[in-house]
Structure formats: structure tokens, C-alpha cells
Image (cartoon, rainbow, N blue to C red):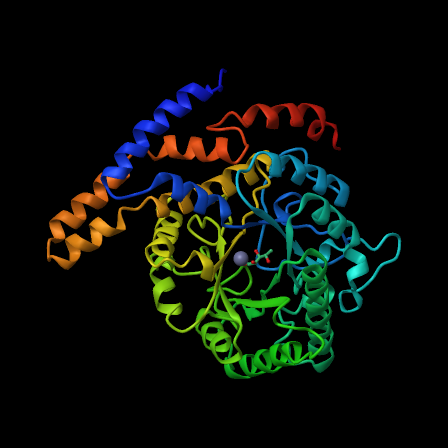
Length: 427
Ligand code: RNT
Ligand code: ZN
């Protein structure tokens, strides 16, 4: 298999593409520059199938998410995760961040429960991030714990359970603030709470009231500054075991975020299959200053497949580009596939996300809006269709060259070598 793409071929294809886009009023050089500058937060949890680094507890029930597959090479500890992420970073153009979950704390031989975590338990991640010059984002882990087995955490009717998770939320924000201060870049902390019920609850009210109160208690910590710790809240339609009722639904969080000045998080897998997440962007951004986006790929359900350049992802970033809103969104990945090489999963998903960003920036918005304003709906439709046939692949290859990474699919060679040398040696 010869995957090489010569620099001369990329340059001449790019010249033709640049001219074709220029005719439509699109500056490809500016689009490449902007697309490279949008930070994408890489989720650490694809590397180990969302297992975390705590000593496994017996009898844990699921958390509404599920990584399926048994492809060899799963990272088994923090060092292996960081080694894998090092290769991933080399294969990705543009600015990247790392998104950690609290259960990736490294506590040595000592077991430290979630309510007692401190920045020191993440010092190895922080050193790594400092060295690689990547910002760190954070997530409290309100699942995979015996105190989450009932299906309720922050919305639990049991005060002790609630207090444990409130404390977890509070220590997590201190950790995020520490990352921000050390790295000089605000840390986005995303609160996703799995609470809900399999079947119809008699009381949909009380858990929502309790979740509101618990989140308020977490956010009330005056030692944490919003300038360092950017809180986001992620709603969901359903999960495994919470098919009928999720306490933190989309409406709950859209309203909560609005009233508490925190950021709503939209995950592409968390809505009815025919609902357009792209359409929500211009609605929410009328009222919210910022949005957090989890790019994912739901197949028939919230399956968290690896992101590809599908219509949902393209539409999402085209909407953001048309609204000039890249400085108002945080972009993060959220998928986990244990059935394929996990390094390739990262690279495919992160590249597809940045391709969608680039495609959004290459959209001939001015021409489309002019056709629309002139009442020429047929022209708008024809131009939208024509945009799909534009030579954007040549622009993408140039973006890879300018980003100092392998173009096209040439990165597969590095993945194959790493699989032979490193991944295949893991038990
Ligand atoms: C779950 C949410 C959440 C998680 C991660 C692991 O449905 O999407 O973002 O995937 O926190
Ligand atoms: Zn998510």
C-alpha cells in the first residue's frame, strides 16, 4: 500500500483549489489559518475504553455509557495513555487540548475516594500537558462508583449520597482551577450526571429540584474563580438504565445554564435521532455567551461511535462558521470504540472534526445569503449542492502540511508501526 502524497502534488492541487474557492469569494489561506487555531479537546477516555485508573471496585453497575469491542492494545495505566496520546498529537494538525476525567487520578498505592481528590493526584498529567504545551480540561466522574449504583448521584434522595457527590464536584473544580493557573489557559469543566430511571418515575419533580440544589452547592465555592474554571452542564435524552427519565435533560440544563451563567454542553448523541443539533446553535447563542460541543456519532442510539465527516458534524460547524461563532464554542470529542485500533480512532475522529471546521470556513456563505436575500431559493439550493463538489480535499492536505502533520491517510503508517512495536506487546 503506497499512501504517500508528494509535496509538489499537494501544492499544485492546492493552487487550483484556492482559485476555485476565490471565485466564490472564499479565502482558503484564511480558512486554513482559522481552522488550525480552533482548539479541539481530546477526550482521554478513548485510550482505555472509559475504564479509569482507580482500582476496580466489585459490583459496579453501568453508567449509561458502554464501550464495546476487544481490539488488543488498550492502555492500562497513565503512562501508556500518555504514550498513546503523544503519537495522536503528532498525527493531528492544529491546536489540541486534553480532556481528563476525575477517575484518571494517579494516587499511587493509596486508594483515594472521589471526594478527596486534589491537584496533586493529577501532577503527572499536568507535567505532561506543560511539556507538550496543551491546555487541560476536566470532568468530575459522577459514575462507575458504588455510590452511583442506585442510578442517582447529585439528585439522590439520600442526603449522604448527595453530599459525597457535591464534594466530588467541588474538589473537581479546584483541580480544574489549578490546571488553569499552571497552564495559563482556562479549564472547561463539564458536569455530566447520569441520574435517571429505567421506567416511568412517579415523581419527576423532586430529583430535578435536588439536582438544582446540588449543582448550586457545587458552584457556590467562592475559592474557585469562573475566570479559571469554566463550568459546563451536559444534558441527555436517555442512557442504558435511564431510558424513561433523565433528570438532567436538555431543557433542564438549557434553563439551568442560563440562570446560573454556566455553559450548556451539546453532545451530538444526546437528542432524538431526527433532531438537528446544528439548528440549536443559533437559538442557544442568542442567550448564552458560550457553548460546549461534544462531537460524537450516534448509530441508532447514543452509541458513541468514532466521529466521521457525516452530515450532522458538517452541519454543526457550518452553522458556527455562518454565525462567525468559533470564538463562542468549545470543541471537545466524545466517543469510545474498543473494536478498532484506538490511536486510529482518535486520529479519524479528531481529523473529521477539524475537517468539518475547515468545511464550515470554506462555505460560500456570502453567495448563499445573497441568493436568499434576493428571493432566489433555487439558486441558494444549487449553490449549496455545488459547494459539496468543491475541491476541499486539496485544501485539507495543505492544512495538514501547514500544521506539520502527515496529509491524507499517510498517518496510517505511523499507527501500524506503533501497533507492531507497542500496542501488540500489551497483554
Ligand atoms: C455521557 C456523556 C459524557 C461521557 C463522558 C465520559 O453520555 O456524553 O460526556 O461520555 O463524560
Ligand atoms: Zn458527552
